[in-house]
Image 1 (cartoon, rainbow, N blue to C red):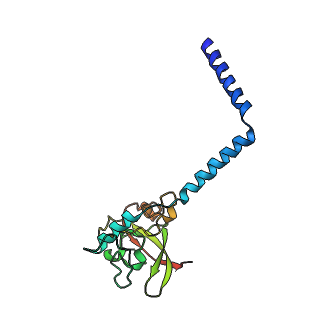
Image 2: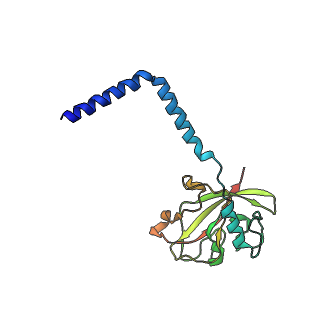
Image 3: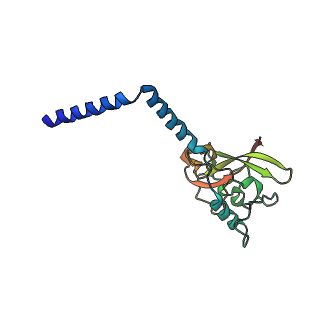
Length: 187
């Protein structure tokens, strides 16, 4: 009991000393500055050169892994096809589907992530909505890891590391492959 009173007395003295040397406006101002600084942290640049280099090295045998992603428009089953600039998964075109349709026996997830990809043929950038096809085992065909425009997981609409099958019909939670339909012109 006596220990509690000493502790209470010590906390009271410390609180009064802090209150006597600081103002409410100053404390609120410092708190606001800390919160504003914390809000700016997501705007800091993120170095993704390592993942892009690995993705490019996987697509071009013997190519320099530091080379920039150069999109092409003739082979839809290749990781460097222009619509696949931010795909992280298996291309459905290699598993009986297409760029816009899931293979038979799979269902389209209701959620997606988006990226802006450059089409070298017409010189335009397009918004691509990557959508997972779910309900069958992973196809394992045409695996790609492209990260152009990807943001961290706390921005899920731009994060390609998430398996989006949680939104598929009939609880088809197993990932199979990814389609890449065009939503519209970017910017």
